[in-house]
Amino acid sequence: MRIDSLFAGPRPVFSFEFFPPKSPPGEAALLAAVERLRLLEPSFVSVTYGAGGSTRQKTLEIVTHIKRDFGIEAMAHLTCVGHSREELRAILDHLRDSGVENILALRGDPPQGETRFVAPPNGFAYASELTAFIRAGYDFCVGGACYPEGHTECRDLEVGIRHLRAKVDAGAAFLITQLFYDNADYFAFVQRARAAGIRVPILPGIMPITDGPQIERIARLCGARIPDALRRHLLASASAEAAQSVGVDWAVRQCRDLLAGGAPGIHFYTLNKSPATAAILTALRH
Image 1 (cartoon, rainbow, N blue to C red):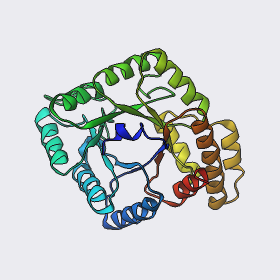
Image 2: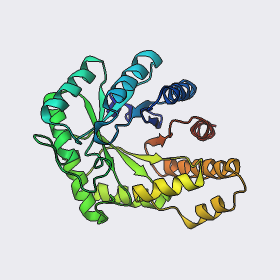
Image 3: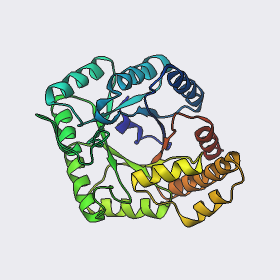
Image 4: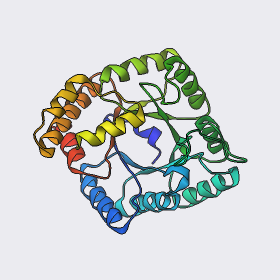
């Protein structure tokens, strides 16, 4: 099923994001998380792509496995990093032949050890170019990423909206935001996007907090701001379990406010774990 068709339904779209494991125990843990979370009947799941294509094959395997054996709609991430047009075409052919219908087209981060993104030979420099390439040769439903607080390489919010408009004009049918913890950033972003003529669904991305120091590191890498009130509650937590409880409570209230404010659903960054995401989604549905 194409993801763009899900937004036309009467219910919010709830989706989960996983990353490809790098070891057999990691793969077992991932599949166990998928098994538990599928009981919540997600609208779709997505599988990320390692920097430099380092987990390309595993991404393809996991996406096709989830779709075929778990009966859940799956979306593959695809980046520009390290791929020529010919390599991208081979990947797209494989996904199409495997029955995958949805792709999240991304520029991708520079490979580890590099500080600047460099377009590969006969490849692409921007997600908008990759999106246009996919739409020109294939019938995939293509999604794109967006950044309510600005991209780490471009903190100018208006310039970011212009880049986003190019991505949508190239064929992105829906957008998923980077993680954020202050809903005001999402609502202001959506308002700027609509004012610029961007009409596609904008799905907010939420990462449940299960570890305070870990989320501080992730937020710094993503350029996301942790509100003072949330940080105070996390610092006051006497244990890891207490910190997770704070994170789940914050996410539940955040998601309820987003849905009440018109968000088309929630995209959960799961970190390949099920308990926090399951607790949040269960609370939202009751």
